[in-house]
Length: 138
Image (cartoon, rainbow, N blue to C red; front, side, top):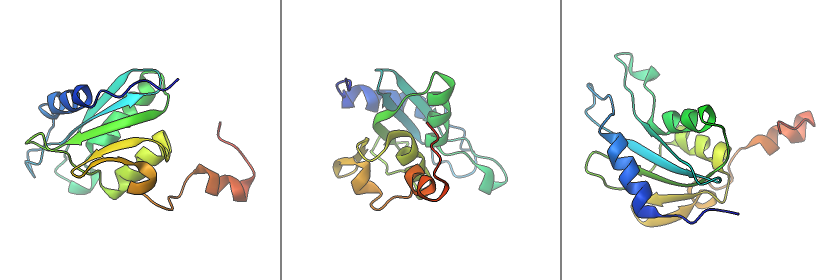
């Protein structure tokens, strides 16, 4: 059974973790919170690096936390900027959300709640690999 989504709780968790972001170069702090199919909330914040290309997006930290704490599937995600406003994940992170939440995962956008199938239409996923390899990663 899918847990009920409390968007205010997810938003609050994202704002709280955003305060821990390490963004000394861009000063663009980001926090994210995701509801897992078992009811857990996992969070992440961005971590920059002097070598800009190896910075970690907040969603990377959240997905790492998801797997480090037992795995599961993301049901809903709230990502915020330093003002606490809804922020859309970048392209790389949209792919992470697709892989770990799938087309039905809900994302709070500046325009309201969207399904991942709307955020990343015609997404590339594990099923595309399995069509060629015939293998399953389950």
